[in-house]
Length: 82
Image (cartoon, rainbow, N blue to C red; front, side, top):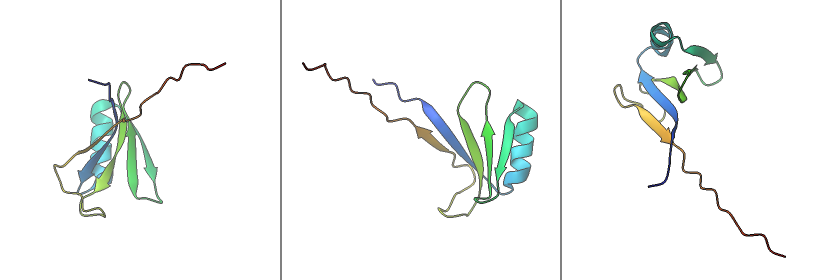
């Protein structure tokens, strides 16, 4: 089975600001706020980053439905041609 690591996680929350503070305090995550998208991003020390999205935003996020993004990138090697 190919290696497809988790690269990003979106966590829906009723109050993304409060949720990001809670998890930042709990796990010592670095949180950055993107005002243009109303998105609270986190970076875990030894894992993928992600963000907190508002429940009900477009697309319609639901509480408890975490979105996990995995890498599907494939590297192809082509032999050198002379």
